[in-house]
Image 1 (cartoon, rainbow, N blue to C red):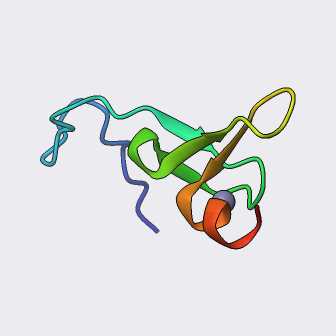
Image 2 (tube, protein in one colour):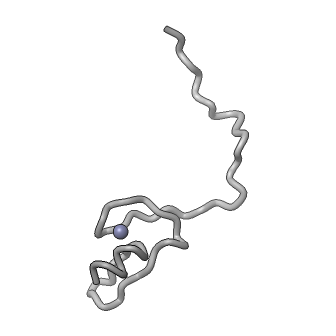
Length: 57
Ligand SMILES: [Zn+2]
């Protein structure tokens, strides 16, 4: 068994833009900010992904 060292130093596919990841409060999936919408119909406003916004709200 070989232990792989965690690739912390070299990231071949370095993230170009730091994407903010949000967790959808509805489905619990982590998605980038571009996939999230703030549902202001709720108080406090609920952060949900676009898919949930279409289907659930
Ligand atoms: Zn969702």
